[in-house]
Length: 254
Image (cartoon, rainbow, N blue to C red; front, side, top):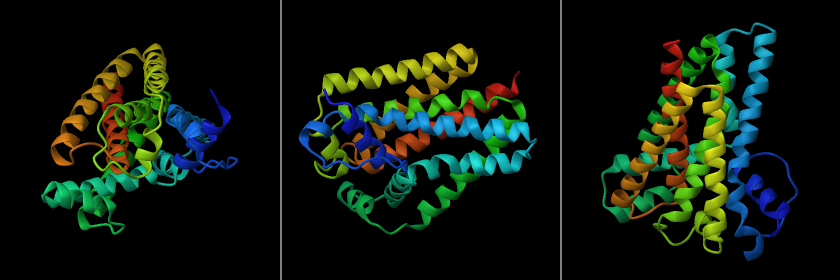
């Protein structure tokens, strides 16, 4: 099993981290999705470093939250937020399934995409302010790994709505048993680490995350007939936000 090439392909696709480029082949793409959660590790580490810096220099919580909200976007180039916006546009159209799939492919952003994107950032900003004040930012870093592990598992196990596209190119040759095993390991390890450090927050966030998976699977089957790259981005962003909110409210009880 090759390790380096699939890792770099995953990082180059799902992040802005500079890595060597490789030609996509059946051999190196069938394991690439296994490395998707590694992008979450980089996001979590970046957030942790920023938090330590702000703590050391007593940075105002507003400025901390503004940068913290931006870190996942800067690290990934906004690829998942793009999927979130496209999916919101499609769902808000209330059109037939075929038309919704066309909207997902449309490069233009509709009004609902802009509205919900702004709401997403506004809520994230408020949550990060609260977590910074409550000194619970450490609990958040694991969520970036958890959301990516669950997103990839859904991509591997659920029907592709189009049978084409970038997600299909990642999953068509994938070694499913190996991929599911490693992705499950990333989910279990991220949850275990979070529960070990923050038991109550970890348990609640884990339950919320798995509830989001059930909603996502049901929604995509009903609305699109399966998953796509855009809906995967929608799930990832939604999962991270609802888990962030749950961690914040739990931290308020301490």
